Image (tube, rainbow, N blue to C red):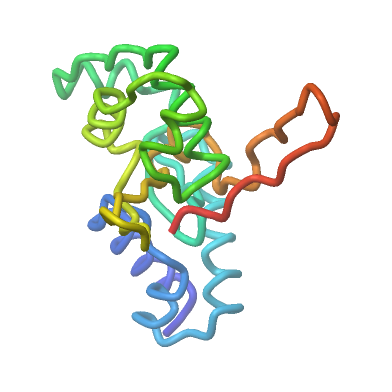
Length: 183
């Protein structure tokens, strides 16, 4: 298949998906090896991201997704009659930070760090698609494990958790490593 047709197929898949599509999935569907798929995907993303159009292609972890450009957010919301989401509370931002740097974590772990009940905040962040369940911990009661989502990455404008700023420890002066990428 020629490059233009491959790029067209990738555009169609990304547009139809609405969610990030992994490079492995694109390579498999198009019958390409991973390095070739990566090169074609990067070229396609560069073409979209360097144009003045309303669409861009972003990398989220190992996936790729079509998104509208942030500068057109007001027009998109108005045309689709979408209300702007309320900003996140300080409690929500703290919970997201603890989860992002330590995931997967239990709600009890976050509550221990914050010193307050976080059940309402967890429910809200899960409903907003910023946190998701990641299985259960192998302890009595089998508590749920939580992690951040690709929507979390998209909202921060980053492609992986490795792009989070390092944590500065007050006592030791050491920096913690960010958690693994969101899948």
